[in-house]
Length: 280
Image (cartoon, rainbow, N blue to C red; front, side, top):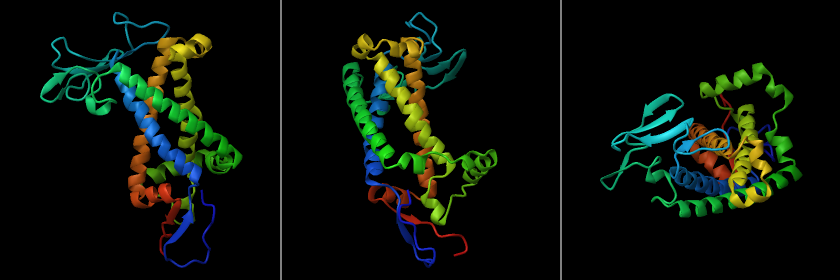
């Protein structure tokens, strides 16, 4: 984070500070490639059997808790969660490509490759998984050694006080972003989000993915037992992936609202321009 605080007596001219280390920037952009490769290829794999179950087994005639499908004549798509069914024609279950109606769960523009190929989807998924795992382990080890995690990511006790949390929620809802030197530090909602991704969502995705791998399953079958069986692991894997999508959407929204040029530049060069304090 802010490694070289600006001079307290600086004038109102724009102040640049060092915000992101090289390790953080490199991991961030590697993650962009890895995560989008994983998400899009994962949707291709999901299209092979667009249903999710709990427990050890799951097949066409079992009752899924989530299903993305089309009507018998293929003209209408829908998403069903339990007994709740929502029509999604044109987006999920039934959509057009090159003037022809398709009944895959997710449309071609969401998947990798853009045409349906389970074998190619698995290859892309495997590539993204290795990139995510190697970059993630290296980043985590380096961040523990240079105390980036302890210093910048873990919330302090006072930040977890209900009053402080609620104030941060209200400030975000009103689009009142930190200014001055405070803008170069993570606020408590950012810390909680990043820690949740780094230590909960990504590890769960990796573990469930390893558990579903036939090779790993043969030697480390206990991984699936942790999640209650193969189908439960598949469901947890999907839920974790969707939680990551929610994080990405909120993250991009906050970048746009906080000033995309300044935010993106800081993640490329490491330099961040402090928004001036009000009244200066």
